[in-house]
Image (cartoon, rainbow, N blue to C red; front, side, top):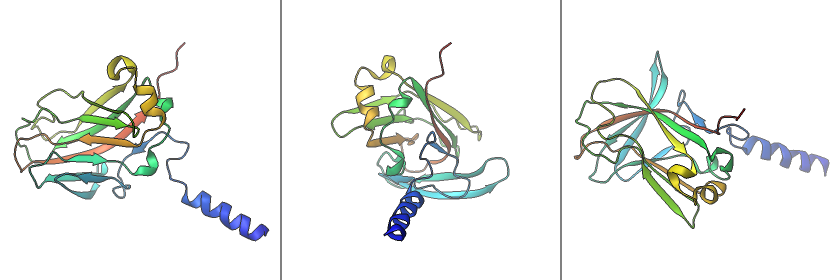
Length: 185
């Protein structure tokens, strides 16, 4: 009986997501870390960048607005992040004109309520070949009073990376991080 219990316990520990007890952070150094894309993005993991490590490359392949989706096991009770921030790094991978203003639209949902905001400035990411960090606040002043309930049972998170009105852009995506609020003094 002890052997069965130990086997079950060990299996549970080994099956626990790597993010358990940590802030959701994805650097994509070795693979896509369970991220997927939906509605028109063809995603591949790119490795070997001497400065960045790995990153995800998403090529637009349909007229849909492609979004990035984190692995389901990274969602759940995110109430500790209300008042904090979510950030990611992106690069315009083929210098297409960034003329689709919905780039950076973040959708958060809990199965009952869905919140959606485009908090990234228009014309992003610029066609300059450089990486740019985008930081989105996760506070009730920005999202409204429903944010705490949504974050307490987060079951949906999508991030729109479509930045061009057409089927040609390539976006590079890296360093997705969620941080709790800074401690007050």
